[in-house]
Length: 146
Image: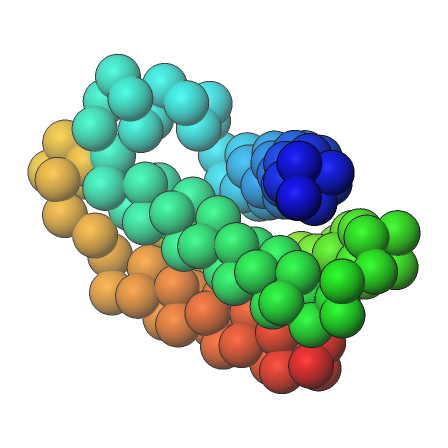
């Protein structure tokens, strides 16, 4: 019984490490696709648009990681690979979705989303569209995992 608990603890740390690495990559994606320093915009300036973009990206990645874990059939090695692969695919597809929206909308989407008019207290309506697209992509990838 103790061996089972130790294996589950080890698996939790392994999946946690992969999930955190994927969320860090998601953070970097938002950092690269929006102007300015993301951390400063969110934590210092209180930019709600930037916070929405990051929060939804991280939530979507979490959905994909969770689905990969649940469907891993207790095979830790294969589950970790599936988690990393499908998480990376999800991030790539979120970036593709973002750039497609950028192409079909006026202006620069990243700049529009983190525009600080109103001191960052208002979220531009485009932020909700990008948030919905990210969640949609995450749901599609999570469905593909199962």
